[in-house]
Length: 132
Image (spheres, one colour):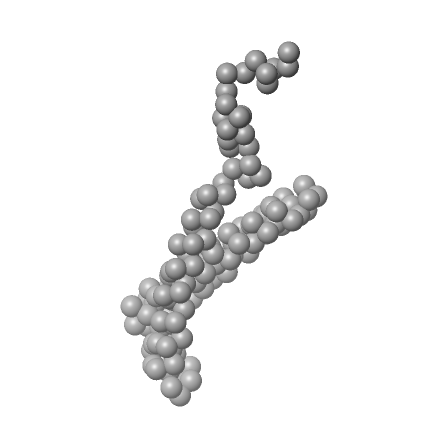
């Protein structure tokens, strides 16, 4: 008799938490929540900029982003958008990249690149609002 034949565990119990990454549900929910947030933030951003910055000048744009509500909105849009992108790319990398070393490098870059972009963008927004 094999070990699996003598086990008291049910078939479901034997396969539970043995999926590809073990994080599927969390990523699924995070992807949906960030999608909903982006559905709200992206149109706000486009309409707000279009109405406030009619002459498309540098000073009008700086004045728009210097408003604390707009600054918070832009920071949220950047952070949530880059996180959403990172989750989606992680799923693609985990599912379709087979070579372990390539997968590890791409997963690192998928974490580092959005983080660097987010830090730079958030720093720029805060610099406009608080100055140096």
